[in-house]
Length: 369
Image (cartoon, rainbow, N blue to C red; front, side, top):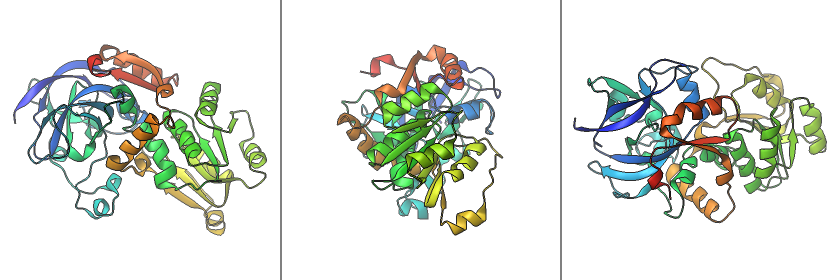
């Protein structure tokens, strides 16, 4: 399989620092696209794999929230051309399984060549895992055509990278997963990068109240900027505060945008009759939460999983980009720090500490404008 050299941040042991190494990336095969990466944002899912909370083969290259420029096309690729500015997402679609046919690519059950063999290898020819189907902590990636979405050339690739996961997951949870109608009472538990996008999704959906819950005062301030009408800290009685905010009606929709099982259980305490609890955060493997099944049944409550905001990349990403261009969607203020590729471990550590909404790692600064 022909290949070309790339530079990538390699995870060789769970919890260890990443090492920048020279690797080889296979040329794009049937239905695949090679993209030169301009920038990649750091998501909590990347940390979960790097730190060993979720299992993965090693060595591996992680990162999945990226944007760049198309470098080459494999056989059979249509709809994008060399030189196009694109967003790369982990959501891929075979186009023929029952989920893809129903317009639910996030649940695609199809198989892809990269499932059997990673397109990345080291100088000895040993495979390196393509983490999260993208491996964006690298100077270039090869992904299936369905993972690549052409982006408005007037949007910087740094901003565009955020649309790949954090924004599409948070806003998508509101519109795609929960279909929040205007006038609803919304509570968001956890105001990191994804939670803040749930907040601004609820604002866009014209929710009557948007109550953001987070122990970090900095995140509460950010939530107000993104559209929260009320904020609650760790020392507050969440149930009493939500009851007061909603005049006793409680929350029609509770979005759990954190990996805490305690937050899931607390969400039921503020959920109204006929309400929906939406699980947006991805907890470590094996984490469970308890619920009162009798109350859920008696109050006609629902529990909804929301992987990637039930995203349909080809439709949702251009729509989000248009909202940003029109001034309705905040992207710039999501970015806390920009780090050169050589400082990726600093960017990861800043994210671990909770200092950042979204940190960006810049692989090709000349492509950003």
